[in-house]
Image 1 (cartoon, rainbow, N blue to C red):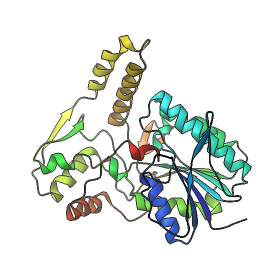
Image 2: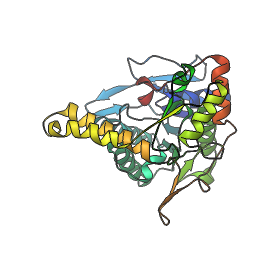
Image 3: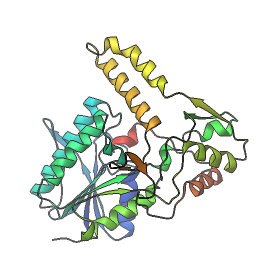
Length: 319
């Protein structure tokens, strides 16, 4: 079987693109899936082979090479129920079927640490696929990262404009050990090459200590040389907004999706992205595994030096 062939699904997304880049640097031949209408953000390389996806009914056809290692970075854009089932579960199931037929060496799923306490549609869809993967008969690894730098720097522009950093509650009720896309890509590729990490669920974060929203506000303010200004918002705002859509939920998909988006907002406003200690009923920063060298502080410094602003957009959530 080939030892240096990867198939990356979701290859043009935030993490998928980084995995492709690092894999090519390591000498892999990479087959990268792309939607027919997707922008190709991948740099040309003689060892990069693009797989333009096609559908047969509800199934997506992935051209997985025989014996390749498969990495799934597939994830829904919105997290709403219909989108989550179609992408997080159904499309991953199509990929798993193609991987099984192709006798894949290992199937690595990029999941999320928030599935530890599932309350949302997309979390249940991811867990449903995790269960299918674990009973598939293939070697697998399920990687559950904590939080991405990209999702934590959306308020840099506010601080640049001398506007307050917004957080929920006191800004200290939640925390995470964020991981850079480069460090996560390296961890995933290391996992592919390390059988001792196969057939396991692997939570992973970046360098410690864990940071609260208040910590991040202070870091960004310091680096951009702005006075620390913050404003607290009650997480109950999501309950109020959701109540506005409730009367329409039985008859309107739009209302159901808006209601679910309010649930998602409240979840991230009130839950930490750390390993959950079910015995003691709390999040545990100490026992959240970490990897890499990239810190949130260094990332924000680089953003200011380069003048770049990373923002979460719809196109990078799926591929």
